[in-house]
Image (cartoon, rainbow over all chains, first blue to last red; front, top):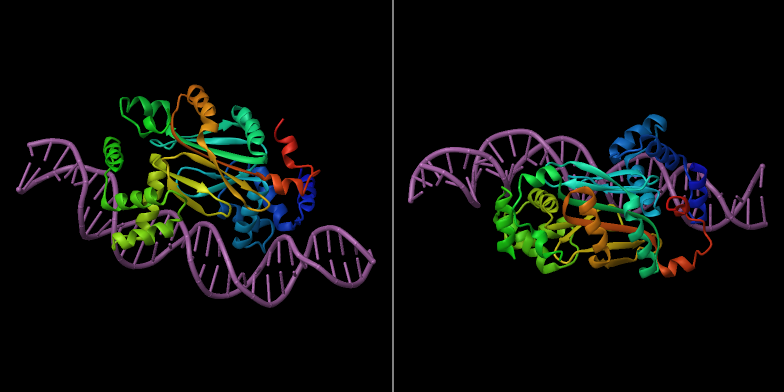
Length: 151
Length: 151
DNA sequence: AATTTTATTGCAAATAACTACAATAGCAGG
DNA sequence: CCTGCTATTGTAGTTATTTGCAATAAAATT
C-alpha cells in the first residue's frame, strides 16, 4: 500500500519522505478521523523531529493528492482521515449526530460527473447538514429554509 | 430574505442580532467566497464594535444552520459564502483551477439521500479533487490511485 | 412597559494553523 | 556510487481561530 503511494507520488513529480510515511501510517492504522495536532503528537513518538508545520503542510498536500480526506465535522475545524474506504458525512444540525455514508450511494453521481466536466476525478467528499429523524419529529411543522432552495 | 432568516432562527430557538444581520448582508452582497477575516473587516466598517471572535462564531453557527456554506478551497483554509445559489467545487490537483458546479447536477443524489437516511437534508457541499482536462493530457498514462478506490 | 430568561457578544488570553527562508535530503541521471 | 537539481523539512515568527467568562441584549411573558 505505502509502496504504491510512494510510486504514485514519484510519478507525479513529488517525493516520499520519512515524515510523509509516518503520517500515512498513522492515518492508515487509525482508520477514523484525526485532528492535525493529534496526528502530530502520534508522529512525534515515532519520529521525534516531526514539527507541526510539517504535519499541516503534509496534510494539505495529501488532501490535494487525494490520499487523505479533509472532513468538516460539526464545529469549524477540519479533521483528516485516510481516503481508502471512501465515505462521507451527514451531520445533524440539532443534536450534532455524525453519521457516515458509504461511497457507493454516490457512485452514479461520480460517474456522471467525469463525463460532464471532462475532469478525471480521484477524490471527493460530501458533507451534508440536516436534521436527523429524531430531531426532525421534535420540530415537525417548521418551515425550513430548504423550501425555496430546492424545488 | 433577511426577514425570513430571522424568523427561521427564532423558530429554531435562536436570536437575530445586528452582528448576524451585518454578516448575512455582506455574504449576500458579495455572492462569492469570503474569508473570515475579510468578512470581519467589512463588518467592522458597518458595525465598528464587531470582533473577530464573533465573526468566527457566527460563521460556524450559520454553517450549522444551513445559511452559509463552508468550502475547503484549495489550501487548508475555509472560505464562506451564502447558501442561496447552491453549488459545489471542483479543484484541479495540478494547476489549482477552481471550478464551480451547479447544484442541479446533484439533485437526484440529493433526493435519494433523504429517502435512504430519513434525514431532512437542508445543506450540503461537495468538494471534488482531480485533474482538469488540460493537466490530464499532460500526464496521460499515469496509474492513478483512483484505480482501486472506485470500481 | 417592565421583567425574566438565556442566547449572544466583547474582551482577553490561549491554541491552532500557516509562511518565509535557509538547510537538508530524495531521486533521477551519469 | 556520485552528482546535481529541486522538493521538502525545521526553525522561528506571523497570522488565524477558538475559548472562558462576565456583561449585554433579544424576545417571550406578565
